[in-house]
Image 1 (tube, each protein chain N blue to C red):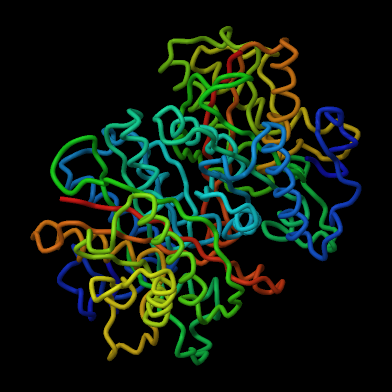
Image 2 (tube, rainbow over the protein chains, first blue to last red):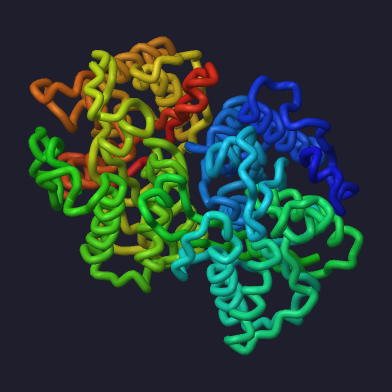
Length: 311
Length: 311
């Protein structure tokens, strides 16, 4: 599911449902986010021809303080729930944990997902949007929406074959309007460790996508990889670059938990179904800041979790 | 590790290290919490005679917005990191996920932990402590400290034999000064499901402890269990009741991620080592609120995760 701005972007046809406004019939943006997330999770259960009582665990998270969008969604679904916080990397964190639980024999079905909302994130992390603060050219636009996936021990669809859990990496970036730069070193670290651990090369993947680095962050990953003699070509894309186009005035691109979530669950999984993506490496990226840590003079560390999906 | 107030309480001798003040040499309480958490995790690694490069994953979380105490700790440790948010149930959430990853063959060593700090929690969730707001008699006192455990595929110490993942339960409690009442229904739900799923009775455990219900919340669990014909005796305790005594003016008892963490990692694990606890059922409890959700008129749902430890 995606918001009205995302519905005007290049990926509009890949979403199951799009919204006409940011409130979605609710009184507050926070309640709207919860409603979007809940409908998305329910839609995933329906599309898998399951009912919620068949799901062993829900692994999910979002950007809001104390992940309230997710908590209240979990309350309404009633599925045993393990809350995650990986900032914008949360969908990929949930894919890793969920697939390990299934492969370890602890679950038959795990529902994973993540959500974000432009207006709830802006007022929590930056400024009230009513204030009309001018955005830096390096800033990104938090995607409104949610994505969800049912992981199963067997069935249709691509398999999760490999995963690389991220380390928290900090190159000293402290500008909350340039999060792509803050997260790029973590994305490069995870990508390089993934290739080294698996003995694979970038050519083994039809497509590699980072979560929400935006156009400047993506360029940094290309440079950091090149320094380690790994060449990234046009088969390396970023979900934040894909989700909006230049005319939409989002500056460096999309961000937020929903950025990698709506692109992975729509564009990428559709591409795997259609067959033009055979092997996919997704690298969910997250900036581990809070307004409090920034105000106390901290830099912005990043994290990135990689998951390989194969037909 | 525990703070100065905890060091004056009945469990003072069970902590590895206690602090003399709440700042612990740092400029802010948030930085103090991070330092406490980091030292606790390092101490756990040392006590297990390991080094951080031997740890496959760090699974941890705390109460602060965007779990910054944990993120910055993870940055300094460099261990592949999966961030969790289960409010005050986080240690138990991490024990469940960590033990499943090990048993599934995905890790040899998993480091788990959780932290909280009275002063960071008060100003984030309630009032700045400088304001001197009078506390309700049902209110609890956030424990300052952190607990950590190294989970291993083999070795000394008790085994995790069973776990029951919590569902989010909401009986409509909306008073943020009475979180024990908000969490008690979730604790009872998890306890009853645990007994039903395993075919065990309360007599199978030398000790059952909930995480941070305080004295009123504990009484509610006893009543809710009794309604389902399950009798809880004096072998059912609450970490929040154990950690402070009546003279310390904490009202209903302790709370926070560190409440179940410092009691489990100290008093409980010591008791298992000494042999007077042979079988233990811990039920980590969490209140899934944020200041924003309360201000928007939401009630306070709870969650509880149960873990059985056996010698």
